[in-house]
Length: 171
Ligand SMILES: Cc1cc2nc3c(=O)[nH]c(=O)nc-3n(C[C@H](O)[C@H](O)[C@H](O)COP(=O)(O)O)c2cc1C
Image (cartoon, rainbow, N blue to C red; front, side, top):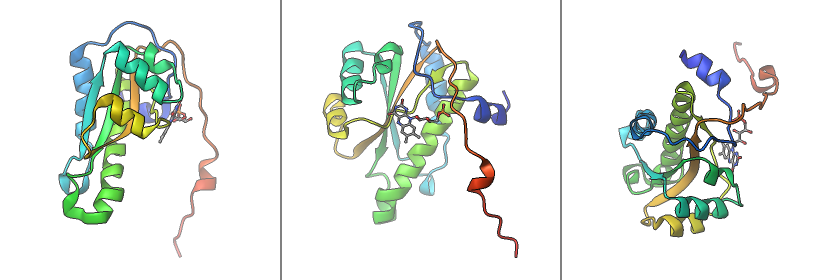
């Protein structure tokens, strides 16, 4: 699939078939995340692959009861490693590692789509609760929960007019 097609056609999916996803495919999606650009190539991300149903139930609860986290057969908890980015000081910790990990998330959403797998970037969750559920070390900040599964809906989100978001500065 062309990159442009994946970018234009990917939509958030919130209804999934229960069919599991092969470990090999999940690994390829994580690999797409791992090839994101990062500050000084520090690769400040860490991925938890959550298949365990009890953990997914707890994550859904921490995410304001977003039940589709339970419906999808797997959820990736994507964390930014705040220690990795120490060479870049405050800006590294407060900005770069979040930007890089966000790039990894987007890579995964797009690549998953190209394989026919639906996903949704879930950012609305209680961070402290997620830390506890996942038993995360203090250096790992959970940025997103990404449920992955074969889609049982087609997303339909639209975009506003691109021209309203652009200012060309030629002179
Ligand atoms: C930082 C961030 C946080 C988000 N959090 C949630 C969320 O908690 N729950 C949800 O259903 N969608 C969430 N989304 C998905 C957006 O709702 C979705 O991307 C947007 O409506 C555009 O739709 P599309 O992804 O289908 O193009 C989040 C997206 C981003 C980038």
